Image (cartoon, rainbow, N blue to C red; front, side, top):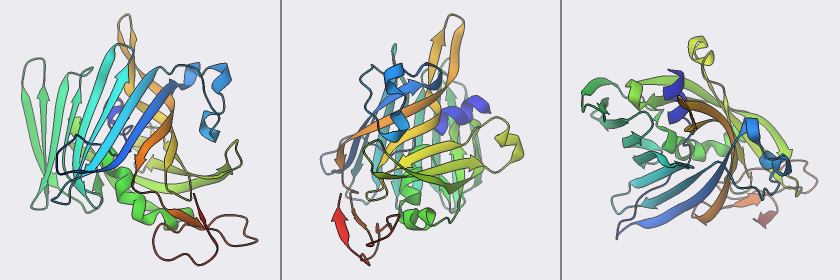
Length: 287
């Protein structure tokens, strides 16, 4: 369970392949640093400090809105030896319709489709082409890794105020889903003096808690941009006898962001109010 959840819960920003009639929503490039070997000049990654050192791995995330209203997404995680994990998803308003994950380290292709209130799983072992399938009820808050942020985006303002949101995270290669809760962990300031908000996604079950650490997402409160991540990675590090799991810090650079908004800031307020939906109630500063 540990390996499956680690791989599938690390890709939390949507991305997607090109199609002629699709509108670009996001293009994000991420740099992935193992926590046990953060370069000395990069100790402030999670506070927005620049890091000139080369990263262990990279992720490229692109998403596009297609004419049918679906967001088609692709995330590609690469290690020094090449691409390891390729994840695609199709969702609408945060609700996953279909997902496909190819894990070249585990040699598995895992698929999910939500249809008629059911979630259909299919896992193919790429070594011998054996197939396992199963069907389960599809809950309203079902997500896959690349649709988590899309699902919680409309609730950023409530999350910032302390409200918690339950999620059912589908783990495709286990053909199952697990209960997590997203909550506000803390607020802080970057090295440049800008506000940031940390959301934590933690498992609910004591059994899952024993093998899966909480994951933390560092966001700019004015735009909702995820600029850093801390937790288990989709990538694994090659060893002489195989591969090992990684706990990482990841920082993101946005090339395209169609979700960029403004933040409403009250005069004499110590913290910004989120205005990702609705009209601002006080002074507006464009980010």
